[in-house]
Length: 417
Image 1 (cartoon, rainbow, N blue to C red):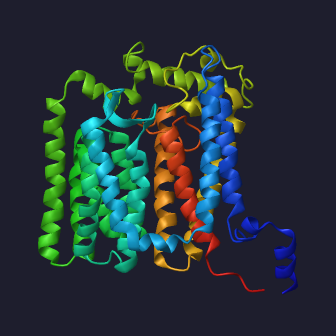
Image 2 (spheres, rainbow, N blue to C red):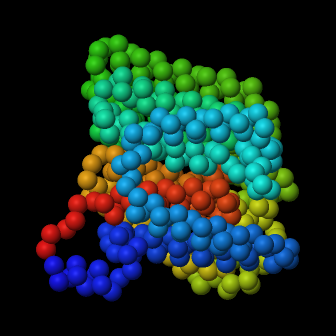
């Protein structure tokens, strides 16, 4: 009682209403956003661009949204999830009709001189919708899982029509992560991903493709109803996926094949499709242990890496801050993931827990793919690095998701001492 009286007397009203907020999570993200502005500025010294302070400006706006949303009861979203879903899809349809094209995709709507990317905000809309649906019924039956895929399919198709492969992949990661957290059997998750593995193995290790198809049959036998039909179906789907991948691969043009495989050997086209990745690896490698120092990276300051301030911002971190700085960034993300899991486990009900896991799936997938992309372990897919890459819509989306999760943390059951 004494402690509560002291809080009421000495703390501002708005601050006392945030007593349960996860401050470590918030400070980690503020730190990454601040670092992002510095890295963006270092990539544009010769151009005199203002992207770096816009990154900080929208970061400050995002921080304000977090503090507002953290005080608002997130449970209210449950009764509005279909409205959220409808608005999300309407904006995605509007992009197709009146959107602005850039970099080969029609993904933006111009509002008041600013280009807004609805597909970014659609990530939060999807998380809210799936969290509300899975809160009511867990993913423990096939009809419920199929319903979730059906709900995801509508905005996913609209995004792929833009086309925006990177965001489409993020939608898949969000859906699978939330399904798994909602008690979907692990075997089902493996079976869902198995056709992709079969497609890769068919072209890399044919004997492995056959073995994989048999293993999927065993998993189907152990985890699905109608065992015989499920087993034969799983084997047939994986064999078909492999065969189709070989057929489709033969139909692709050379430049399309290069987009998918050039990351394995970018030296095959050092002045074309492999140029950006080669320069990125040079930048990261030249940073060595401690880095070249802020604004002293040759590859970064002399603009050797196209679009470095967006998807390839991690190469600026590696060159200027070195191995130590890169590990610090990775550790920060790891701590963010850990705090999101803690919030999910401590939430007072499934809806809040699923919101936290939805954000975790969204952020973790983007971090893993982006960093693998910049060091040559994954194809270039146009996925930004959360809070570090420049992108106003993406930055605000991540802060809105953070605000909802902080609301989950703020209204979780209070600890008793």
